[in-house]
Length: 561
View (cartoon, rainbow, N blue to C red):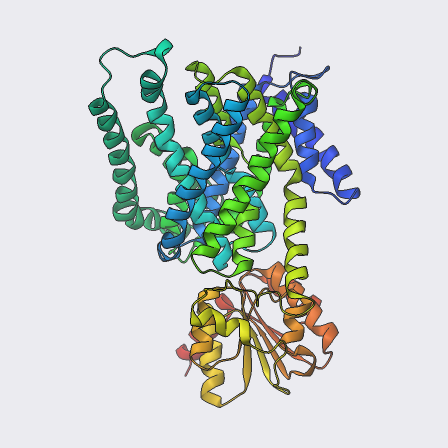
C-alpha cells in the first residue's frame, strides 16, 4: 500500500531531477546550478506533470542555508570578521541604498506607489547567501582578503534585512493609507527598531561570551568519546540548534545564527574535522535551495513582462555590481578585489523572496513586483557563472598576460602601490617558493630567513602581501594555482617549493602544475589526513607533512630520548 509521503516525494523528485539535469549541464560545459534551477522549474506548480511541495522544498532549502553558513563560520574567525568591518559595513549600507533607489525608480516607471517601489528596490539589494558562498568556495576565495570582504558584506546585508523584516509591517502602516495602523507613531517605530537591535546585540554577545567557551568544550567532550557518529550528530545539533534558537528567541535569521555558531567553533582545534564532516550534508541540502528557487519561477512572466524583467535584471547584475565596484575602489582596495566583490553580489535570493512576499501581504507591493523579483533571481543565478567569467576576462584585458594583481586605484596608498610596481617575474633563481603565509607558511618563512635562504612568497591576502613587502620579502598576490603566478615566482628555475595552503585540492593542483614546470623541483606540502597525503603524493609531492603524524612522532621521540 502506497502512503502519502510529500516529504520523501519532494526530496527524491527534487534531488533526482537535479542530478540528471546537473549532469547534462556539466556535459554541456555550463554550471550545474543551471540544471538544479531547471529541475525546480520542472517540478514546480507552473509546469505540467509532477509537482513537489513548495513549502517542504523551502524548508529543506533553509537547512542548506543553515549548514552552509555554519561551514563558512568554521573557516572564519572573529579577527577575520572585524578586519573587514571598515569596508563591509559602509559598503553594504551604501550598496543597499543605491539598489533600493534604482528599484524605486523602476517601480515608479511601472506606476507603483513609493512604498511599493521601496520594497521592490530593497528586495533587489540583497545577495543570496547560498549562491555567493558556493561561488567563493568553488573558486577557493573563502580564506582570501577578497573572500572575507564578500562574506563580511553579506553578513551586513543579512543584518540589514533582519531589521527590514521587523520594521516593514510598522512602516507599512505609516506609508500606506490603506493599511494605516491606529496609534502608530514615530516613537513606536523607534521603539521597535531599538528592540530589534537589542535582540541582535544580545544574541551576538551571548555567542561571543558564552557560546565561544561552551560550544568548543562540548564538541571536544564528544570527540573524546571516540565516536565519529556522535561527533557528527553533535555538529548537526550545534548548527541547527543555534540557528533555530537565534530565530525563535532573538528574531535573528537562521543563516546569521548558524554563521555565529560556526564562528565560535572556528578557534577550536576540531574546526577542520567539523568542516570536513559537515560537507556532504551541506552540499546535498544546498542543491535543494536551487530547486526551491526554480519552483517559484513562472516562465510566463518572461512573455508577460519582458521589458520590466530586463530592467530588473539590469539593476541586479549591473546596478548593484557597479555600485559595489565603485565603493570598494573608493576605499582604496585593489581593482581585483573590487571586481570579485562586485561579481559576488550580482544576484539575489532567499531574503529577496521573503521581502517581496511580505510586501505583497501588506498590500505595499503589487503581485507583478513579486513576479519580477522571482524572475530576476532565477535569471541572475543562471547568469552568475557568466558574470565571474566576464570578470576574469576584464582582469586579463586590464593587466595583459602577466600578473593580474597589479591594478590598483589611482588614489591607492603607498603599500598597495608597492604591489603594483613589483616586477612581473622574480629575478631569483635556484631559490625556494613558499605558497601560503598563514600559520604554517609563516613558520616556514621564518626558518628560511634564519637559514639565509632566498625565497619568494605567493599569497592571496592583500594585507599579508603588503606586510611582507614592507619587511623586504618578495611576495606575489594571487592564487598559486594560476599559471601566471607560478611563472612570476619563477618556479621553473626554483630549487624548492613549499605548499602551505590548507586546502588539499588546491594544494594538489599547485603541486601538479609546478611539477610540469620543473620536474627536478623538491616539493614539500602539508596535509590534514591520510587521504590528503595519498592525494598529494600521487600528484607529485616529494614529501607530505601531516600534523597529527608529526605530533605522534615527536611524542615517541621524547618518551624514549
